[in-house]
Length: 144
Image 1 (cartoon, rainbow, N blue to C red):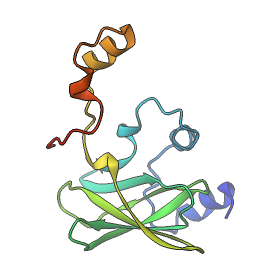
Image 2 (cartoon, one colour):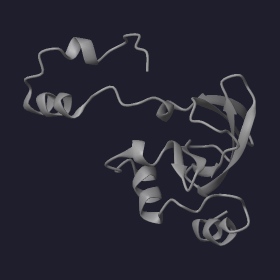
Image 3 (cartoon, helix red, strand yellow):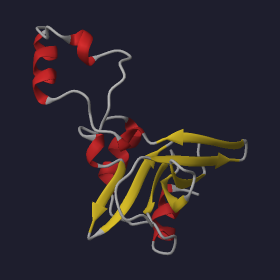
């Protein structure tokens, strides 16, 4: 499937079609300024949609943490950008069942969780004056 083919087939594949081509290109190239505004579970017009970028995947299905299917995501870009409408009523963490010709694997949706760093953290890190990096970076258990 080509990128042009993806756009042509989009109208019939169940994807939301809400993500702009510019946002998709920025996500795929790793240059999007705010990936949390695009990826993960998002609300639009009273419905929940999911978007994921999983390189190498050809098919994606969203699952609750209990393993219940909550929707199929459709590939919008050959690099691995997917989106689709979810059949859940409230935001919740998801896992994705990914597959391609080589097999199947599971991925947790990292965008189900809020960013850990705030604007002041970004500011002080940029200045090189953050005095509590040990609290913000590294492997620490946190509850969202």
